[in-house]
Image (cartoon, rainbow, N blue to C red; front, side):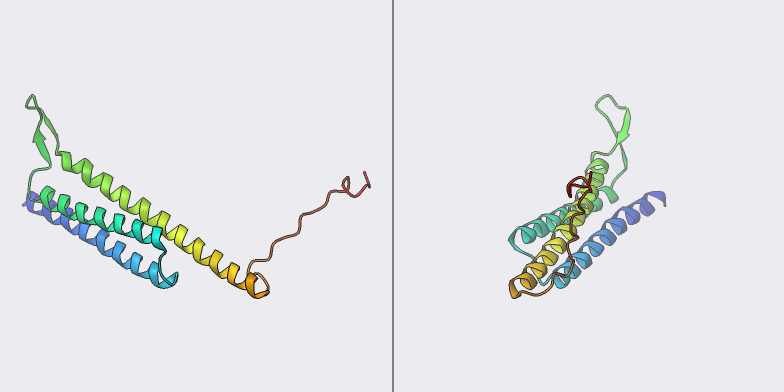
Amino acid sequence: MTHMKEHIDAVAGAVALVAAVNESLADLARSTGGLDALERAEEQRIRQACGRLLQAAEELGGGELVVAGSTGQARPHPLVKVEQELRREITEALRKLCFCATNRRMCDQANAIARKGGAMPFPTPKPKRSPKAEGKG
């Protein structure tokens, strides 16, 4: 019974993460008006990692979490580490992509406003002058 629960947990966890990634990528593309070429390449890399994660989780879920080492000692299944690394890679890459794509969109909007001669959406504060610079010190 425990083995079956581990299988379900490994696969269900991976499926839930991949579903969240797919939803986030779709939201990102909508909110930014589309991804540029580099962002699309990063999106593809994230999706490939998701596919590898699903494969690893399925294989890991169908077997034992502990295997015999070269001298017969018990050690974690090698796919446990692969699964952990893929989860980390996916979440870190998605966070970076969201940050970069959102910033690109804001810069594009600010540049479009500036080209039209309008006010910038985020006013730039004027530097404060020190009394010494004004000859009062």
